[in-house]
Amino acid sequence: MPKMKSNSAASKRIRVTGSGKLMQAGSAMRHNLEHKSARKRRALKADQVLAPAQSKKLKSMIAK
Image 1 (cartoon, helix red, strand yellow):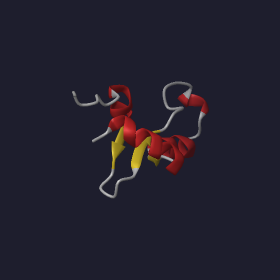
Image 2 (cartoon, one colour; image 1 turned 90 degrees about the vertical axis):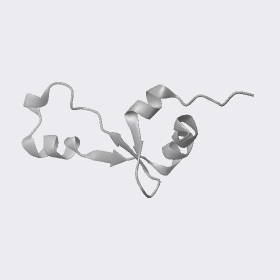
Image 3 (cartoon, rainbow, N blue to C red; image 1 turned 135 degrees about the horizontal axis):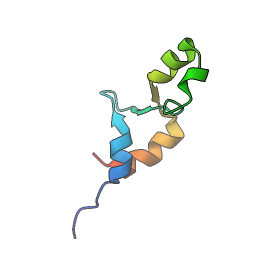
Image 4 (cartoon, helix red, strand yellow; image 1 turned 90 degrees about the horizontal axis):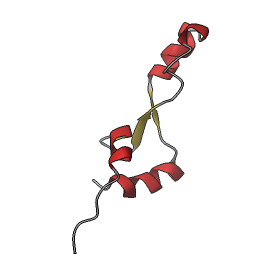
């Protein structure tokens, strides 16, 4: 039986840290940046750790 394919869309958007947590780049940094304060833009630039409920489902999708 062949191997299961990983979800390539999920694997492009999520990376796994050394400790096994899943990180993602947040939303709201594509447009309308002139209306956001510099403090807000700096906070949005940082990667975010996924919630445990989400990461459980997505680990099976990326299957590394």
